Image 1 (tube, rainbow, N blue to C red):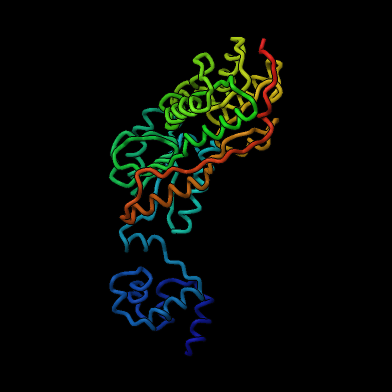
Image 2 (cartoon, helix red, strand yellow):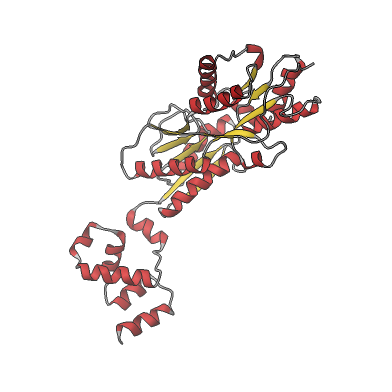
Length: 354
């Protein structure tokens, strides 16, 4: 049977390694050695390797994944640990992770710990039972060294061996404060992130530093800490922002703007401002951080500091794959933010909250 006839017949069959080898007139071992990139492939003629790859492309052959795992003694999978799977912040990061892993033919599994301390402690060990080759922690602290490479996104964890993908918090705060200052705001209230949250301390330090450089006074009575990392299971971030803004307003404190820790706390603050008979931005300006999808569609549309979350997720996956491959990577990769001006910030007006 002519080669073309063999390939035509093969096109009507399910293309397996054996079928591919039979119609190329080669052994399954020869084809497998070439496709797996084994060192033995160097002993095979270039013309033979070219024929194999031509047939693979023509018939869109996809190696059996289970056979691939057995042969390489690898799982080609990683684990992603998040606080909540349905959270928009985590979902955008996971989307970026997925896009990179798909290109490299890696699988991933996701587990959420729901801010429960015991689950945060136990989940890494549980995930190791799946024979993953690496892990990505999203906004999740890690306290101990793991036997596989680990990348943390949006968490300033100091566990041994962890590589981190973080936003440039100083630049993010600078962009926000400079924007408010340009609008005439000098009396600004601040939401500090939850205690034990990865970005909270870095962002708070940036607030004090940038404010001092800009001639803006950070007043204790205009600063609110949004609870703790672990209490997120009981109190949403929107509720925390609502409660913090309500407390500011009820103190009759004279201020003209709120710089929120993130978009969700900004949304809560705007609701509280409206519930107290005030307007955004006519009476109070509000700026968030993250640029979640809701920011562009709420009323008023939220001015915010954009974290390129999908890009950060892809950077986390890229870093982890390099670690798995044995490459050296920086301990920390810092991603630049972007100011997004919408409707929730405006020029300061002379008025006093009664």
